[in-house]
Image 1 (cartoon, helix red, strand yellow):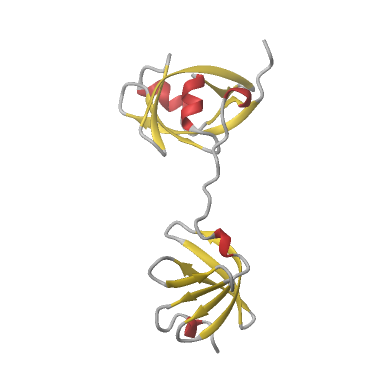
Image 2 (image 1 turned 180 degrees about the vertical axis):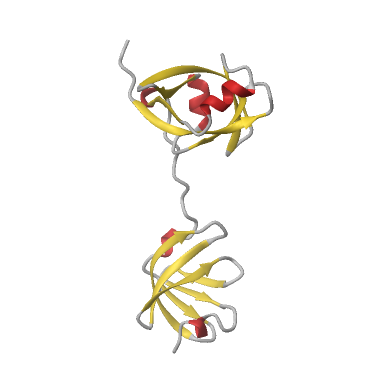
Length: 173
């Protein structure tokens, strides 16, 4: 049997209920492939100890039940520990593709103000994607969403927007 290639796949949080359930958050790997593999490793006393997954429910911050962890005390002992899996048996999560990433290099033009600048990067924020633009010597962020974008001209590589009144005034001297 091949030696496992152990990688961090998430973190156990705190116990949930009294039956040994524990909250878990997964990182960088698909939850489905981790659960299908059925085995997690937790580092205890310098060694990776395998635990068999009994059940996982929920998403994001899920609730996990491990075989042999049957009460709150046992779950508490595992709280705040990193969890690991064999990288050869799980799949990396595909990074989410940004909807407006293709706009890098396009010129942003506001209907009222005129040319704002070239979109240097598209960044993901919890609420929406933002265009990073060099504007009057400073980096500024402009929201990219359907309510502001009027037209996107692929041929001319321009984005016509109607920004909220006063937004650009925050950056002008």
